[in-house]
Every structure is written in structure tokens, then in C-alpha cells.
Length: 316
Image (cartoon, rainbow, N blue to C red; front, side, top):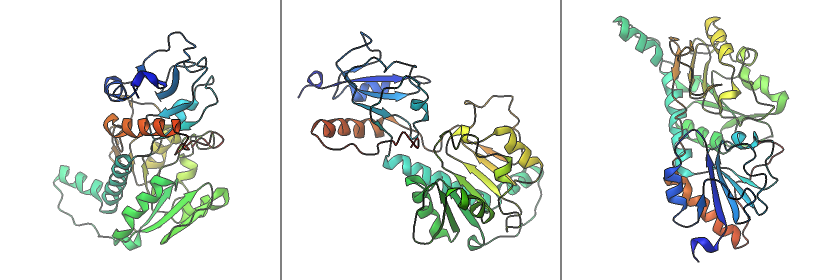
């Protein structure tokens, strides 16, 4: 079947050049960057990253929305969004990159790398106490697909792993906590907090001074550490700085921020106990994601169910 005989795809992105996405999607479908007319009946699919507000609202035959990113808050922010299924990205390469990032940052904090980098700059020769992995509890906040894969990556090192999620979960070798009643016990038992939550109205700003103050204070690392590889608005940047300066938090690895790119004037850049990456833990590359989207479109037209559909009530 020719590309023009099937539903057309609207590709609507802001913040980067969509050329590669356009090129790959166009191999199998006719792709447009703007609906023309606004109520174009030939558009049945939309591939989005921070789309223009209302760009989908008049499309009468829109059937499925695909998110370019792992999260969908950038789509749900549009108050004129039509009521059609939203499919989130679940791809092997994204999971692999995220597992690697989390293992890297956990091991970096565990092996006192910030201390040794500081000592190197000052030409200090001092061997800090080496803590065994089994003495350290890593808490994964957001124990969905990525959280469980991160746990699998860390278990062979010997870390004690805690997982927290909104709903009860089970996984062999993991201490699982859930709901509001489980959050404080989870934090109290955690030395290195890994944040992988989706952004929802309930999680907006959840990583703040109050939450960080509940992390284990008497752990073997000399203080708790934070790793946020989820969404930037999960955290409050200024409160992380306060927690660091007040000794509530020992160190932080931050891949995401309230405003991105992070302002050059932000004190986070120069803080001696903060490690920054530019939202690079797991980048969405068109070469890996366009194909699965096209496959889903074909399967949907054959009457097969969509996979990885977002629950709008929860936001993920």
C-alpha cells in the first residue's frame, strides 16, 4: 500500500529541527508539519514534542498521538488536546541508556568520586574509607518499566534496592513500598535516591527540601545522595541547593531541571557537590523510535490494540 493511501502523519515539534524525524517517517507515510486546512481530514496520526497549543484540536479524523519523549507531560500541557489515545515511547535503546546512566551515577556516588575529583584538583593524597555495596541502600522512586530495569542493573553489584511506586509492586530481591503511607519509610531507608517519576500534578515539585530531609541521615556514605533522571519539574532547584548547603543532602547528580537549558546564572553549575548533564541520560533518537511508531500505526490499522497507551487520569 502506498504512503498516500494510508492516514497521514502530523509531525509537530518545537525546540529542535525535525528533519530526521520527517525523513524517516516519510519512508512509509505522508508527513506534514502543519495541517492545511486546520481541519485536514486526512491526518490520522500525530507525532509530537511540545506541540503548538491547539494544533490538533480541529482534526476530525485524528486517531492516535505518539510522544517523541518518554514522558507525555509536554503533550498533556495542551488544554485543547482532543480525546484520542496517547502512546508513550518504550524502546530498548532508551531503557539501555537509562540503565547505564543510573548505574554510572550510583557507582560514582558510592565510590566517592566527587571527593576524589576535589582532592585531585587540590593535589591531596588521601584514601577515603571504602564502603561495601551491601551497606548502601539505593531507593528508586518511580518503580515502573525503567525503575525495574534500573533495579536489575544494580542488583548484581550487591546494593540493597528499595522501590517506591504509587500502586503496590513486587519484584524479587527488592524492598517495595507504595502510596503515601509507604513514602516516608522508603525515604528513611534510602542512602542514594534515584528519581524516575513521571510528571503529574501530584508529582510536580515533589523533590524538595522536605522530602530530601527524610532520607537516611546515618548511612555509610556520610549523607544521602540524589539522582534525578526523571523530569525537571519534579524538583525545586533552589530547595536542592538549600538541602546541599544545610547538610541535608551530601551530593546530587541532576540530568533535568525546572527550566531547560539550565540558565548560565544558576548556582547549580558551580556547586562543588553537584554533577550536571544536559538532559542526556536517555536521548530520543529518531533512528530508534520512528520505526516502532510506524509499526504501531500499521498494526492499529489491522485492528490490533495499541501498546504503551497513557492513562490520562494518572498522566503516564
